[in-house]
Amino acid sequence: MARPPYRGRLAPSPTGLLHLGHARTFWTAQERALANHGSLILRNEDLDSARRKQEFVSAMFEDLKWFGLQWQEGPDCGGPFGPYSQSERLPVYRAAFEKLKSSGAIYPCACSRQDVLRALTAPHAGEDEPIYPGTCRPEHGYKLQVERYTSKEALAKPATFNPQDAARINWRFLAPDGEVTSFTDGKRGPQQFVAGKDFGDFIVWRHDDIPSYQLAVVVDDIAMKISEVVRGEDLLKSTARQLLLYRALGLTPPEFFHCPLLTDGSGARLAKRHDVLSLRALRERGAVPAELRRGF
Image (cartoon, rainbow, N blue to C red; front, top):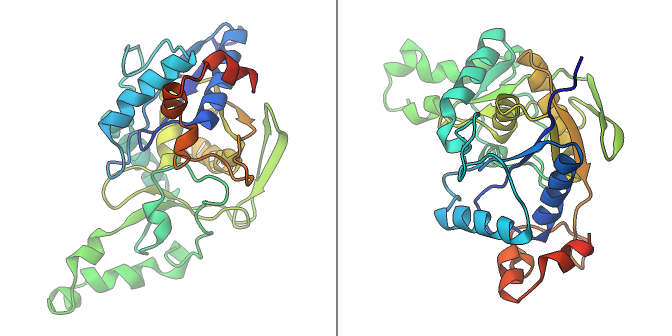
């Protein structure tokens, strides 16, 4: 069989200015697309309505082009698999959510935890959500926690009934405890992670009717026919989670290539708080993209 055309992607989030670490990973994605005579797709991952800003969307386009990146499909130029901004793709995510729900792969969770707030963003190493203790897992009696807000007795006592509690239901993926998820990464080689040890039941849908990062990228990478995902090595564990989602949805996953991270003087990975190394700051200081790329 003929190999399908190579399709890579750039997937920035407009929650801050992109920095040199983003640029190196995106440059690797472009080089791999060119080497495979393929296409590069730009996806605007703007689900985080609390932190996204239009100014960062504009800066994203300008700074990536200044650095020398080119894409063939995206929010600014269109393409056959749009829309290319996640905030415009909610019906597609909901269809996947309903499929997971009907198959029993996910369950409702009434817990209020900090990882719920982080569910919209990629969980980088050192910032990953804690392993969920299973409080609302079906076998632990989710009904006992939620029915107190929905039973006839509770409804008859408005003084003790808080409708907001019943509305704050998030949906978690039921990770198979002890199961090993293995894959071969294009850069890092063989990888394996154990459900229940390396990660737990993770959020796929938030109470405010928004999909998590994990679900959204799986749905988008399939819908946009991405053949290889190039991203930072701090997201290796996310790949294990996403492979479980691909399987639960009956989908064939793309290949993966996780790049080394750029770090600051203390050895910490670059983040959007490193304004001095943002592409915008480098550009304003007169940096030359070709010289920056030579440092890669």
